[in-house]
Image 1 (cartoon, rainbow, N blue to C red):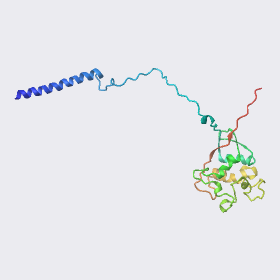
Image 2: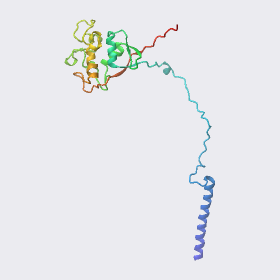
Image 3: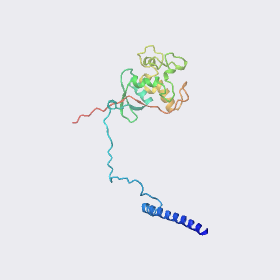
Image 4: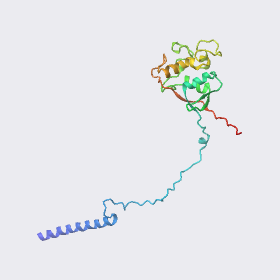
Length: 222
């Protein structure tokens, strides 16, 4: 009985030894004497020099028709100051320089009026200036109507809307105007919030995109 057991155990041990031997032979022949077997990975054939060429496509009709962005970047108070100093016309274009010193041109309707009538201009969530400064001329408006060009001219009580010279525009002297005192002297220079305005108003200067770049005229070659 003991001989039979020895034979069975011997056969099993021999079988596992033979099986392990064959697995070792197969592994060594495939991977070599290393624990990391990379030889079974898929071989990627590459050229020594990259041959990929960027794909190009023609512009679509919408892209081809898209106008070039030519707005100027300028501080809002400088923009208003340039308009006032140029005579604060309702229709004529006025010249100004952007933050990089490039010559630009703007108009009252496109560049100045939106600063007073649109919301979230001076800071996110800000209501438009005309919410208080409107034709109703309540105590909150300080007698200033910014809803229209004529309203601005009449802001200091002048009866003639076409007559210039009221204190809002300082008779064309930006440094003496009421707008300069509120936007620059109090906010920028002193870091104060003008009376009746929100404490959330930032003291930093507002930079906006306005007007258009003016192409320099070509100088004729002598």
